[in-house]
Length: 93
Image: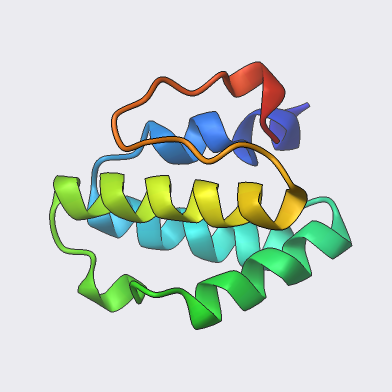
């Protein structure tokens, strides 16, 4: 059950501290329960348009999370969310 709450978009979107984002992303890359999702996420992080070392402010964290969410949605054929739009977390991994 702990994994069910840790590895979600809601968890990522509630982070505002850059150091915590970096730690959390590394946990997702190493421990995401779904192997296929973990591999896709690791590849996304590696080739992300905004590398994590450039995420330095709470606003950077918000932009990184928003863009990451949309890049995953794009791969899955799900809707693209505008910046600042409310997410429907129950519909998200």
